[in-house]
Length: 115
Ligand code: SF4
Ligand code: F3S
Image (tube, rainbow, N blue to C red; front, side, top):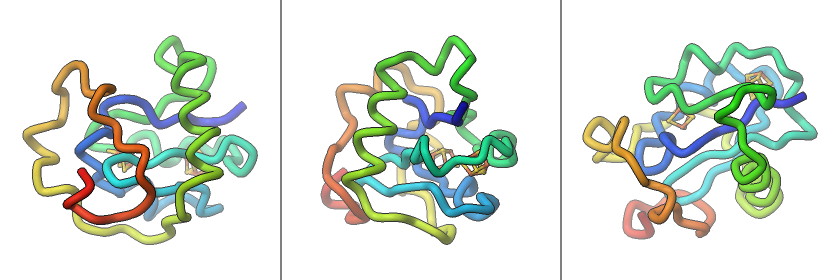
């Protein structure tokens, strides 16, 4: 079992989740984070910390094969993030907006220009 970051993280990236993860298993793309499924210890403490309610357990309906695949693929491609930072500037406007998947950036890292 693992926990999975899903669509509503896109363009929000609040990073409150990072602050509480005991094993630092979050990885950072330009406009979303993912969880490394082999490193997550299933503690669940990140779930209530996310203002976007974007983190789910892999046995929940929102943890589709698509999102499991995104987390696995980009956890291997993006850099680790181990401490909280400012959310993306548009985070509160983007929180809850539908159909953000087409705006997922596959670029690694941190620059607002890449969002
Ligand atoms: Fe980290 Fe626990 Fe969240 Fe897994 S469930 S990502 S170990 S805080
Ligand atoms: Fe994303 Fe929520 Fe973490 S928006 S960066 S999963 S706190």
